[in-house]
Image 1 (cartoon, rainbow, N blue to C red):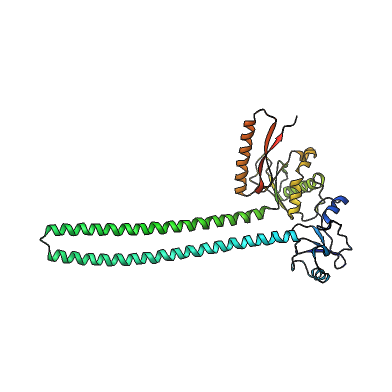
Image 2 (cartoon, rainbow, N blue to C red):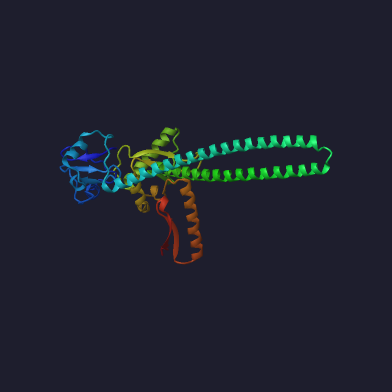
Length: 349
């Protein structure tokens, strides 16, 4: 989506992801600056990232600029609120810096490889020259001093010393170059892994995983998918009180191989991050839900690295709880994937 506007210059309506009560509506459509309601008669703009509404005057948008935004079709012009604009630029700058680092490291690695090839060629040439000189010296000594055993022994000792010294020099140079190459390779690997981790996080940012949701026994996969979809819509409507719109759920798939007598976890991808965050912030509503939904467990869709970090923190929480013994506290891991921490809670009576 490029932008959403309302007011005299446009008839575009705001699409909500939460309940339809007047309180929720005011909360979502109030101006982020003056906190007043952005009505149909006002000149309003919706931020593409945070989905909040702003009066055009409150964010220094001139009437001529507002009319230009309203005339353009979606997809041609983007508009972000002052808060999100800085964060968006930071993300784009980070991606650009990562790409530049990868390119720089690849060029440095290519330069080092070229230097290695050049040095090896030089070493090979020098070795050929030395071997040629040594062959000539052996010929001269053998032809002129063949009867002198002592001189022959000295010649062999000299050849051995020279040969050993040259081998040591070559070995040291090669080891030095190999060390430099390994450093560059390590830096390149770390940069690529960091970039891949950020791309993986971005791909999962709108996802949740639901455990213990009853799996349909329908004969066809299509019917099972439809049953899962119907349960998810009911969950959003009855438990989280979300005014569901077509397209709010982008996809829903069961994870793992189907086995008799087990309910596989289901991955749900929402169209917007705001709806996903709303669900995660209101998980406590499951505690008062019908029996059908009360036993559900909902988590973030984490990357492999985040899952490993989570396992370590869960182990740390269990260790602290063991150390606490029969005390009055329990320890649990809380927070989004990149900000998880072990928290202490008082036991319920």
